[in-house]
Image (cartoon, rainbow, N blue to C red; front, side):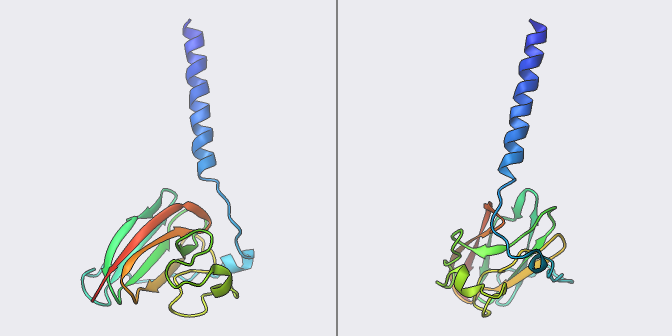
Length: 163
């Protein structure tokens, strides 16, 4: 009886481990590997007062997702996402895979050259590796969802209030 119980316990642990590993192994189409290595690292980023116009906020991306996953800033605030995960990060406006929520243009329209075609496009347009970052200045009020295009189940929200 005890041997059977141990076999069941080991089987359950293996099933749980397989589920956890498969849930973090979603893949998405990523531009060429060359594009993924063009990450820029921001230095001196602090958490300034979020209520002030033009203030900045830092969100980290780890293997567990975005932290914090929801923030509130005022118009004109810059948010910087820093990749501290073991994988790639591609910050993009909701909804996956079109990325049209913030500015109304699709990823295929505004990421033609693996880079946003203007400062008003809330889309990294390429994946960054560990240590890389992406910054975006929010110019209009609203509740803006975003995700990691490489792992679309990792999501967050930036609520932008009027200045």
